[in-house]
Length: 277
Image: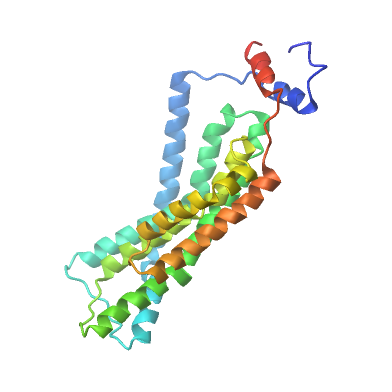
């Protein structure tokens, strides 16, 4: 360890201590470890798939509630249809697989952690639990927002167009399931804005001043994302999708302000000292 640490800040000393040599692994050992984690993750997903397929009728009943509410609101037939005899089986398989991945996600994330943790420094490992927790919480919040607010609002608007046009409404169950899953997963990913902001703030790439400076550009990007995610082109549904994203952006400013790490002048010197050890 370098002897000339007296003039470095306390934070700089910690960085040098953290940059100790990690135990090395050969390429074959890395591949074997990766194979093991993939197998365990696949087993966890298969177990989740089996559980979800066992309860596929209850899951389908839960998933169709938003469209049922909109159909009843417009006094339309609540019977969904299939156009192919194999469609119900395919839909149940797809539904069980997606549900299985969601159920097994804690186990899969744990396997990811076991694979990457040997290559992390001590100070880096402190961020793993908060990041995994934030990722899970905000994804659930995004999916719940889509299920409770965004998708019902879009369905209500679309069914209103069909009703005013005098069309007969026949909704394909598989198409409906694909649409609601796409919206739930899309908003679940979009709701990761605070998590991404936390990571970028902790490594010193994002600051509250930078986010406030670029807020107008952020609004443009959010509007584009809302236009892509919403199944309709009307302004109301775009606002329904864009409003939470805009709110998350300003929440992220607070997260960056609280957890952000300002760049320090001694960082480059610390890095040079640690790499020459």
